[in-house]
Image (tube, rainbow, N blue to C red; front, side, top):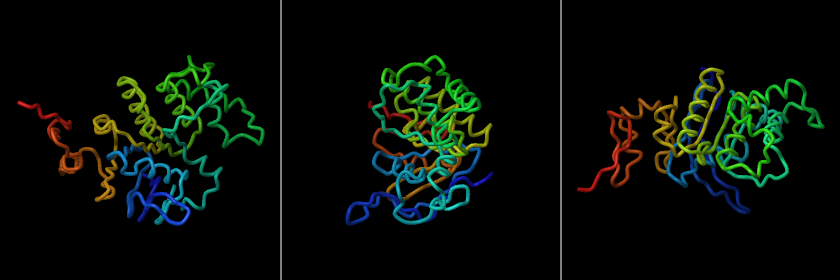
Length: 262
């Protein structure tokens, strides 16, 4: 498998006017093509910051990021947008734009100065909508969509961008359970059948355990722990990582159980 993203001694956080404000430091890990990798961790640990940094939306504080074996700094904005498709959690206030118009923006890295779409671009847009099963929303205005529908549209836009790497921040956050399963299965299918790299942050722990090829467990003290769901189950990492009162990890089923009070 080809290495898609590699981070070495990476520190992430924010640049204020006079200082750097670190969120996490000394992160080392790799993501491979053809795999769905899920990033898990508690609120505030820096999952979104890490994902934004790896996608080029936010500068790193220190360390190295390699995208397809090249330092991220060597990519132009256009080259990076042809390499990484991104779906973030921020909900932009978009009006007077249809679903098809928004998905078509995924083709911007490939169009001319005027943003004109060719026949091949239109075909790719149609295929992206069909993949997510939102053809019926094509002419709907974005501001009339539910949160779940809007999330599916943003994923379709990333697919239309046709990048070898897709990064998603909480892609199932606004979806009902059947839609969560549908989207996660689809993202896994994309990775495994097309060789794309799919990297996403999520709070849907049990879905991630069932469908991810690799897990990145992010912790403020331990940094990143990486492995397959089976490896992390068997070596006890999961039960120690997600400790909280009234909940325990059942190694046999791979599920978290609630301790019932007697």
